[in-house]
Image 1 (spheres, rainbow, N blue to C red):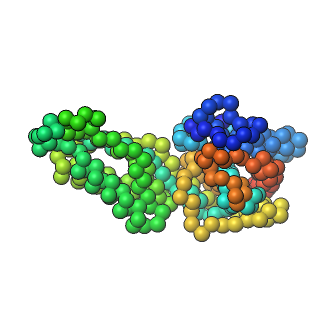
Image 2: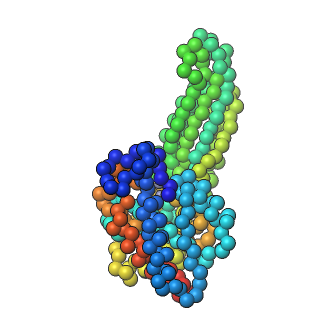
Image 3: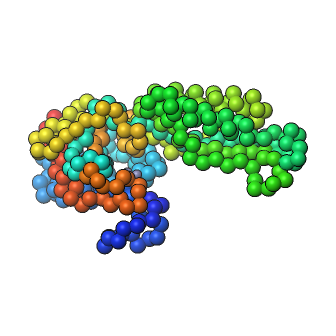
Length: 302
Ligand SMILES: [Zn+2]
Ligand SMILES: [Zn+2]
């Protein structure tokens, strides 16, 4: 589930048999944890309440959560999720009240001018100066405030034709902010910058949005349930000072329902998520099952 377009480079028995595709975020591990929770729940069924286990795909693009939420037949009182986190000691439970992971969204900017003979560039309208100015804006804004980022991921100007000055350009940028209001402000500011730049350079512009993730905002009650459960089970807990800069599709859930996401340390020296040598540490499976089981018990007692 949710394999990534990354070629696995390790020689492990369970390596991907599909070239160029592998499980590099640990969703195979997360699903195994949920299967373990299902097995535990079937052994001792809760006497009251309803527990829904969501095997939700398409976390990586952010489209899965939205679709699953639109089809949910129940309105959950509380919702929980976990993600393994390399760089934290194995089995450590990472919780944070309020913003846990930031908001992000993809911005696709199309600039249209007019191509011309490369010998007469002034006869056309090249988007190159606007591209240069926007790239420097993205860099500038990313240095201004901690947690606010506009990361250029792709740029394309004109054609590979030495006789032609370009008439169009495409820029793709990922915007990030720790909270949804800050994201809205960053988006508005960036749209205004593009509008001004396009007007100055006499270009037409179009903006499309994709892969939108709201910030994952942990509610106080479910977050404290996670922390107390972990402590009671004897797992080490930690709270990062700042929200994580990446985003999680679980933000779509916390936007609608009280919920909390927590991290499970995947080991201090485990390669980072999405790297070709990452492998989900299977030792985490019983830990995840135990924590989830404890959270369910505690939540049903409320
Ligand atoms: Zn991922
Ligand atoms: Zn992931």
